[in-house]
Length: 364
Picture: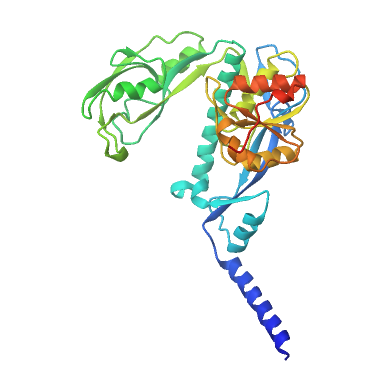
């Protein structure tokens, strides 16, 4: 056999062997890719995404699309060939498996956590939207969860309304930890609460809950970083009562990143005219009760997915701007926003054609 032919044959066989090996070698990586986008002003699976009853609403044209990212499952075993292909593919991103599933988190645990975050994002979006429209929302501090085997277990319950700690009225959920940590581990702290059942009954009967209880709990030491910090083993949160019904119908989506776009969709439904002026606007970002927009993951995938669906403008959290601006899809304008008010002002410029005034994302 001629030397040249033998060399080519050997090289081909080696390449085949390497490819075969690559298929069977698993690597600790996962993949992210652009997911579907959904217009919060439109329908999904035959149902309006936003359904508002008990309040006058207005038809809204245009698009305010929330965006998503597809990720490989927790138990998916990526091989070396797939990893290399993902690294080379423009629209995909290969990341360490622990980035998406830290601490050995299972698929079921991740799905549950994402569902809880998605539900919470809907609540904060409603609050932020109604505040934007100057519609009053009743809010109060609650016990959102109780840690197993903690001093509070069996004494406080999820849904209990926290009225005071050691007689000091609680006006916001973050005040609870501050009041508890005034104590040393082993000292007693007194919670004044409205039990969850009483609160639920009062809401159903449309009355103010009046039954309160004083619960005494002995604090213990936090396990975090060896700190001598007093805790009782609860997480405090905020609950709300809305003056009318707002339902968000969107299944198979998780995480908190749709908050901004849900809030804008609600505002648009409650406002005469169109916030977008008929333009195709997409975006992403968490949102809190006061309209503060927070960063999210997978921004590069979301801009690609939005542009593929026809978006012209993308509302981008300020803290994601630098990453998003490194590779902007052709024809898409990245608009920097830090608050719901920023997004409202941007939409005003977009529908008015004053796009030169838009605060755009840059690489720095």
